Length: 336
Image 1 (cartoon, rainbow, N blue to C red):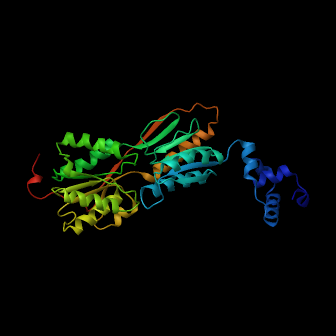
Image 2: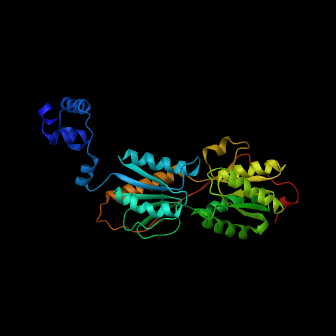
Image 3: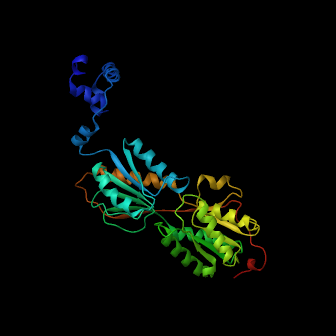
């Protein structure tokens, strides 16, 4: 192509690789180079470029699954930010399978990714490579954590139900494999104790199935009803499980919110259009993805000689009140 255009390979390379130095080349010449590239079906050699720069301009992303709701919203923020910076994603969906997580380190090393982002994942230790997690509260060396203020989330949720007069509030816990299940449960326990709310075994059910659907929430709510069903409100681990719980309550002849108020967590897109529209604790999921991607880019751009250290970025939740919660009727509405 150099002989065809009568130009140096250096000039051609600057234009095709989008180098800032290409700005010094006349626009007409740039247009000729791009037209010739199309004619010759030229594709830049990404491997050679990576060897020259010492970077692959790719980021490994670990995520449980791609499904409507939490994961999709976080992933959108990550992808948009990385793409705008000229980075590609190598994504591994692990479905909480230990063998996939163990293999991910080798796969990322083979692809020479510049950094790793792990979302709601029990993080394997990748060593001193720039690593950022989302909703993974366990601290690791070199790792930046993007986490929600779960204490505040539990506070605004339970205070809302308490202010409506609810005193027996059922809880649907997350699955054991979710990295946020225990930290959120501990926050709920602390807030419930401060409000004088009982959390007896009959008021708590844990989701068990590894399904990206409302089915685990449905089954957990069915177990709560079988355990006695003596509750006027229900706080679910996420919006998808809250929607499943509403279906279970309706199948059992209970109206929402007339008989049972239901409160979710995340504020996924479906929460506002579900009927009844779901009251929920909003996580800024897209923003958390953006924060994770920006943190990774900052670490990569700092260079291999920069000192990596663990840090935590805490984001604030927000209560979104819709029509799935209402004041409790009867004796519970009196002060505790």
